[in-house]
Image (cartoon, rainbow, N blue to C red; front, top):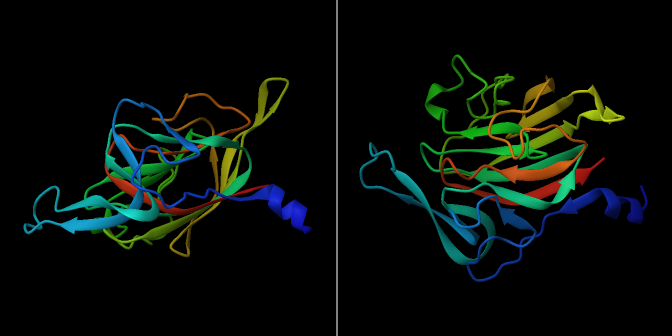
Length: 223
């Protein structure tokens, strides 16, 4: 592949290291007047009482490039739009938290602290599930408070003359180097999406209205 071709299909969503500011460059909040997303270095603070619901929480230090949801109330949406693509992203949640990666703003790979289940009786709403469609095939969760990674190979729905002719499909989802989904077809959007409608392209969206979460090393490769 030529250098110009690589530049056309590969994009790292670069987040510059700056003083704490929100929202990060290249992104916008769904509800600008609610919540707080910042750019910085993620720090996990542990409670002295591990039984507390907020036994862990995230705080931010200046100088890093992590995208951190400090005050959950609003989703975070990329300015860029994508169709067929592969998304690589690292994330971290505190104990008990809930978030998600929405392809095209409409199809969610779940981020949710279900670590204590250890994969038993897995559901689509568990960590790594394609929400409402498919439970993860294997248990790959490292647990809350540590960085983890998704690699999501996604195929957008296709349209002809305004009519959908093929559904969206998760071709492969890898979680911490383990394949947890292959060829999962989505006949419609998942709940909680940006518009509730299917389109040829859409933004990347990080769910931010359920719980704290941090993201880093966000890379999108267009096909």
